[in-house]
Structures are given as structure tokens and as C-alpha cells.
Image (cartoon, rainbow, N blue to C red; front, side, top):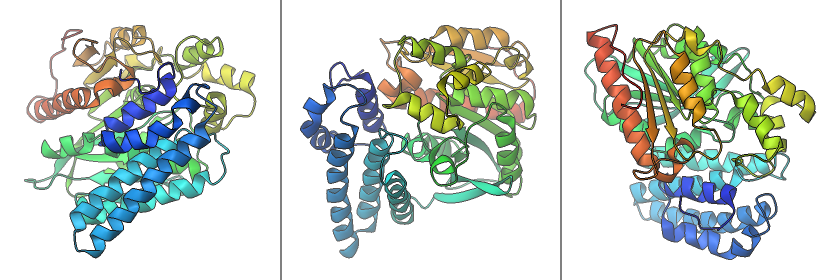
Length: 396
């Protein structure tokens, strides 16, 4: 993995994620160069400096976008607003849960996103999914042209990502070019649902899936028989759990297997493996709505797919990097081995030689994204023609 800040995995992960999500290397270098010394103090110290330096670049981009818009260059302005949102949401992600003005920063991200959609991406819009007595915020991207109702992938994020990170990965546009819509959701415990609505995560994610499917079934342009679910990082627990019990889902992808997330937390207490964000324990307690770490660790033992993936009865892809320093690759094998009821299960391990070997393939995100998009498109086509696809061998 490219390491702008040698020895600081967490900061490097943020840089690589941004670069692989449409960031420009010159702009990211201008954001990172002033904080090289700060990065040597560890993953937690200096995150406010990180935000300040990246925000300075964001401010310059917004000024440029405003000038382009005034000159009538709408597409250029929209793409520039999008890059500004990309940098700002990745800097916001690095802050502590109680950082001053964090919600104001995130609201600015949302405003930049709306401007970028209006000016440069008419295929994407913000939507709200009815959920309990509130809503789940989401972005919805549709194919440009379609003959009849199209299949749709619900996309869920992980512990520290947002619907904006999912959008900037480019996955939704790859699916759109394959005739597939995408619903990118801030689930409870993530993004706007957590920050602005106070919704925290839960073990029984099938409730979220039911709300998403209910919503998609109201859209005439969506084929209700071909609705799939993909989750990356902690979504590699959320999505398989949901697919095991929400039987209207037609397929499932674990983009980064997360078979025993509770065990990962106990490893992290012992400083085994890497962490995804600074201020880690503050963050996880915020996501799950817990105050006491010991009580949280006991609770987290239940975030486990043993006895769950056996109930997945639809096509199931597990994609994992062989050098994932956060989630052991053994968990990918465990999910595959236990998902015996899936009519088409596939385990795809990405190697260091090809790229995509780090956590959710962030070191070569487009490579992993293309593979997942092709698998989804092929599987939806198979489902339309043959309701029971054949099992695919592990590693193929």
C-alpha cells in the first residue's frame, strides 16, 4: 500500500482511500505535505491539524468551483465540488467523536454533494428510506437508459465510512454502466444516520434490509425480484447477517469478510492488528451507542456470523485481501465454508501481486470494484435465466 506517512497505517489508509476514490495526487499532496511531522506523533495526535490542512485545500477548490459556475462552466464546477466533498469527508472521518463542529463539517459535505449532483451527475440523487418513525438517508444512482425495470444493489458501509465514501468509490457508476441501479445507505451507526439523527448500530441488520427492500419495491423502474445487497468492511458482517434472514434479497456480497467482528475487538484491545480510524474506542462506542468499554466488548461478541451464514440461500460472494491488516483472511474462509446453503458461493482472495490485498482492497479499489460489479451483473443475468445457479469453487 502507498504510504505517504511512513509508519502511520491509519493516516495512510485515509490517503489511499481518497486517491482511489477520485482524488488528485497534486491536491492530496498539498493537503498532506504540511502535516508530515504531525503524522509521526501517532494516529490520534494531530487529527485536528489533518482537518485544518485538508480543509484549506477544500476551501481553495470551492472558490475555484464558484468561479467556474459563475463563468457558466457547470460540469467543471460540479466535478470540483465533488472533489472538495471527497477530501472533506475523509478529513472529517479522522476526527474524534466529540470533535468541535463535526456535524457542521459534515453538513458542509452534504451541501457540496448536492451541488455536485445537480451540476455533474444527473443520474444520482439523495433519497430517504422510511425506517421506524424516522428515515435512513441514502443516495440513489440509476442507469442512464434501460429497457424495463432494472436490478438494484443496496450498498452498506462499515464502521467509519459514509454513503459519500461509497459514492466516491465509483462502484455505483460501474453498476449503472452494467444496467444496475445502486442504493447507497447510511445505516444506523454510520454517516448522516449517526451524526445528524443519532441512530446507532445493531446486531439484527435484517431490519435495515427490510426497510431498504420495502422502499425499492415502491419504485416502478426497479425489478423487485433482483435486489441484492453488498456491504464493505463492517458491512461484511451487516450484509450477510441481513441476507440470512431477509429472504427478498436475491444475492449478497461481503466486500471484506467480517465473520467474527467481536473477536477482532478483543484483538484490538491487545493491540493485535491495525485499526481503521484514530480515536478508535471513542468511535466504536459512538457507533454502537455504548459508554463502557468492558460492557461493549461483551456485547460485541454477538457480532458474529457463526450459525448465521448457514441460512444464506442466495448467491453469495466473499471478496477479501490476503494482506488485510484489520480483518484476518481466515474469516473469509470461515464465511465461505459455512455458507453451504448458498446455490452459488464464491470466495475471491486478492493478492499483493495483483493489488487489492489490503482492507476492502483500498490499495487498488478500482480493481476490486470491477470484479465485484462483474460478479453482480453476471449473477443478476443468471438469476433472470436460471433461478438456481451452480456453486462456484473457492478461489475461482
